[in-house]
Length: 249
Image 1 (tube, one colour):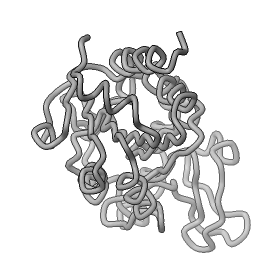
Image 2 (tube, helix red, strand yellow):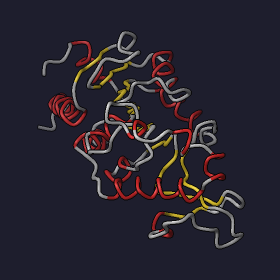
Image 3 (cartoon, rainbow, N blue to C red):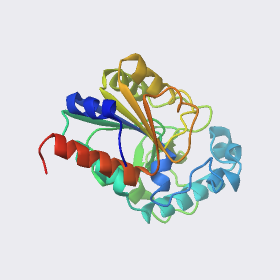
């Protein structure tokens, strides 16, 4: 793939890199997106599963659904897109990941600075006393488990419909976007707010915004550079350019 000259120049001078990622990068590992034609939400109604009232009404059903999703994720591995993002850390002063994904694939790949806007499916907490539990603590729980401290219901640590994002995470993510030199928007349609403000904040802060996606999105016309394809193919090509620029190869 040939890249534009202005992108080459920005790579040469960039120090702070931000990756804003969505379901598309996880789809390259085999995890279905929620909004694609084969998306998980096409099989089940989100309002029946991903809100607090639904959980309190039928906690066992919601818990079973999330256990099923965990099983899929546990059998899934990070892909070349995830691993290439980690490699970027060798060549820039600061590389941060802001993700809408809850699958922890960025963490498993080895990224050192991750901000999870929508939580992490591998964590859980008690709805009453807020005690946290890792997935290992609850393996094999077919029915919703109870807190060992207060007997409250334990729920996944993910953001459900109608809930606020984790305290401070979005604010920090916006700050990182505004301070970035290049923001890569990877595998997201950028239509879910407030997360979708991240590329907007990056532009406002003067960052060069690069979109990497299989298809065009609502932000394709407003970014500086829009690339079509898989992150696991495009990001390694960009990394090779960086290595050449920095004399690493």
